[in-house]
Length: 99
Image: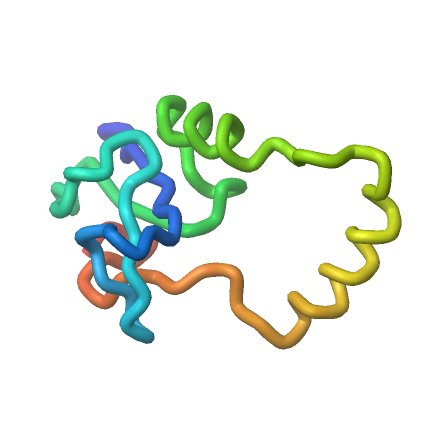
């Protein structure tokens, strides 16, 4: 059985991958990548699912908190907001299985 590389998609208004709701995405490690081999590749918007090391490194580099003093206060506010909003939008042509 071959290993499947799961790339991390990040929201990018200049991205080349269109999500179901029309939002645009790009692969975190390779913004020019637009197709996936369903036998060995897949994509997700969830960093907990992605296994592409370059994608995760790029994600961590861009998602480091700018202000660490008010972590508790901002975490409470964002938890409330995220209950009603979806954080990911899988592209119409790529599902978790890479199909």
